[in-house]
Each structure stands twice: as C-alpha cells, then as structure tokens.
Image (cartoon, rainbow, N blue to C red; front, side):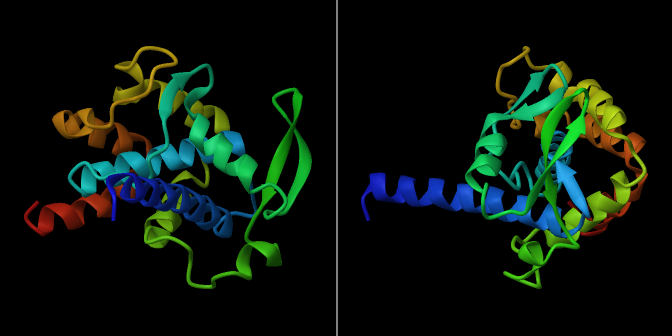
Length: 192
C-alpha cells in the first residue's frame, strides 16, 4: 500500500471515529446541542490523552474560542451527518440552533445497540459526571482548563502538552468532575 493510500485510510478511520463518538454521546443523552457536544468531546480527549499515554479518542482540532474549547472538524462532522441524525430547531443563547435528538429516538439507536466506538463506557461516565452541570459551567471550565489557557486564541491546541502537564490537567478534570476519579484510579492501580 502506498503512503498516500495509507494516509487516506488513516484520515478516513479518524473521521469515522469522530462520527462514532458523536453517535455514542447521542445514545447517552435525550438530546444535545453542538455547544455541549464540543465540550463533552474535549473532556473525552483530555481523559483519553491522560489514560492512554497521549493517545486521544479523536483528532478533533480543538482551539480556544469565544465560548470555550471548539473544533471545526467536529462541526464539519456534525454537518456531514445532517439528514442521518434526527434533529429539531431549538432556541439557545438568543439564536436558533440545531438540537440533535438522542437516546429516545429510534434513528439513533437502530444501527448498533452495543455502541459505535471503543469509548462507549467512558462516554457514559462522562455523561454521568456532567449531568448536573450547565452549559455555561462547562464553557467556563473549558476556558479555565490548562490546555485552553496555554494556547493562543483561535490556534489549535497541542494535546502533546497533556503528558508534560498531566498532574495539573488531571487535577483540573477531577476538581470539576470528581465522578471520573475511577478512570485514573484504574490507571494508577495498573502501575502506569
């Protein structure tokens, strides 16, 4: 296989994994707006980066933005799923936005009852950890996260920095989402 073909296949797998992760988040929520999905996937990438020696769940191009962590590639993936995912128009932050319907909608659960990504269990834990947290609080937390604060506005975040600052980043996560503590306890108990 040529390097070009290998690269194209890798990009295709990455795009598929972001789509699978978005579908799994929807399977665990009655509905989600893009705003909250952006923050949830950011949390997932931070947790997996810490747990898996720098390997992220997605290749989303997160950057510091006006409303917290934001990824153009996540938005593009959602836009690409238009027509496949059930949606409704909703009013949020003074404007009409798309509400992505989730767990209660048969079009979300008909494809794969066991989940779409390898992160299904962690996604459920993130749902539980963020269930009582408002969108505004998630926005503020993402703006106060180490990676956001240490990246220039509108520049892509360098997740390779997570390994170098893992204690600080883990502390940021656990201060806001103590329910995720078990994710890191498993890592410490295994000797990592």
